[in-house]
Image 1 (tube, rainbow, N blue to C red):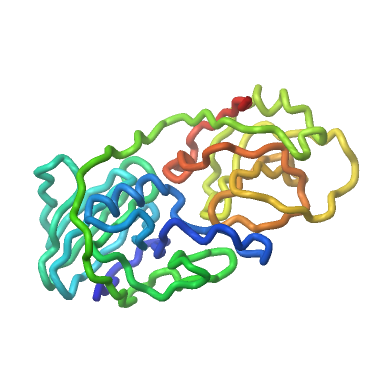
Image 2 (image 1 turned 180 degrees about the horizontal axis):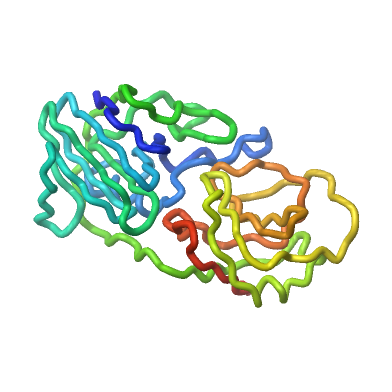
Length: 279
């Protein structure tokens, strides 16, 4: 068992999510930075889709009942075990926590979200085939609070140090495919504009602050389906890029869909975002 001593502002259990349930109104959820989650799992010998912990900006503190092999990936942050910085003999954030040991993942100095993998995985109950916390629908385990106790599975694989962490960029250029409602706007304005990540962003969507997109159509749309990466434009004209916990329908027009939202997982408020059109 692992006991949460300090949960941080938003620490959740995440795996690779529950795709395939949108027809029932259930978003995919899952780790915002799937690359970091897979890497952490490989380091400790788990399958890629094993459940890990996803922290937000300020990390978390955990006490381990039994000794465990642990990896931390994603955001750059100080990692201590029993108040001592962990040694990284292989150049990766892979280490052992002794029985009774306390792991502290501190404030992110670069990026936003750290991923904590434990050999055996976080063994909470699955909901619709996933252990992910969905902050919009409420499916899956509750977000962690101080005192939460988490079960750990039985380690079954060999650790692998193959793979390197993704680079955390200071400016993002996101590829987007226009549609289905790009005819409601002048798409050239989207490509000519520079936006900043808003502090109001979360696991549901990355809100952008910058030049407002002006509609060329009057009236409103009936609700229609939206997918991961949809760039929805509310009445104020400031785009929102939908992330893992996005709704499955929406009534605001979608100007396009971002091909890869993974870089947004580590984009801090104020990060510059520009768009380029995908073929």
